[in-house]
Length: 355
Image: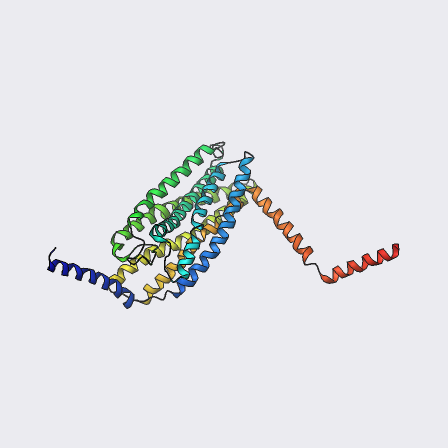
């Protein structure tokens, strides 16, 4: 490379750097909101996720010792494992945002942390779809699926397929850099120079990992609701639990998954527009909304344990018993002092009479 080529190459690098710098200068976004909202949110999710998923998996393991594993339990177990894999990375993200978006744990763990978020996201969607299909077959085609819905083989095979499909979808993400050249920032997407190829990839995974499973779930549950409303012979307990399960899954998708996928794609588009020199309040609002939806997407790890209550009557009974014992203990601990004094007086009078 001669001097002229080196000069041209240096100008290209400086131009690229200036373009990136111009984005931050011409369209500044206040990141203070991110630096207090996300760590607080992640901290709450990590505590609830560890407690809820740990309790749910413990219940599944204890029931398995009694030989009562079923197909739904296998799917719930995989869902809990996916949640725990993500929850253990949240303390590192809390540290990252508290430090002012300075990553202290190396490039490899940065990539792994971001990967586990997407692994949990799309594994959760996959297993929620599997649970929905399982309930659909058991309610809409009970005679045809008699015995098959409780067999472990199909659920284990389907769980393996879900994990393989998620890994295949996420494998291209390894080719995109997650850290800035200085090694300080840990991007949840990728740097500006990779947007041209990263944006089509994200759009593809949105369709294959979210839109298609969402349409399958909507189709299953619409049919389930129609069957439950028409069939008066369905067990009332089964009907109630099935309707609650439908409501929970639709809430998960509406609150955790749908906003995140919308604003993630909008945020990538806004970055493209900023590279072209555009800047408006709408673009800044997209960035802030995207940060909020990132927190909501992580919330599914704390909400998924609610499905254990619908899948396990034993767990619900244990929690009710535990809650009753806690209430009784608190009632005796915080008993009215006047009542305690009255009881003591009655006891002293009885003792004096006996004497």
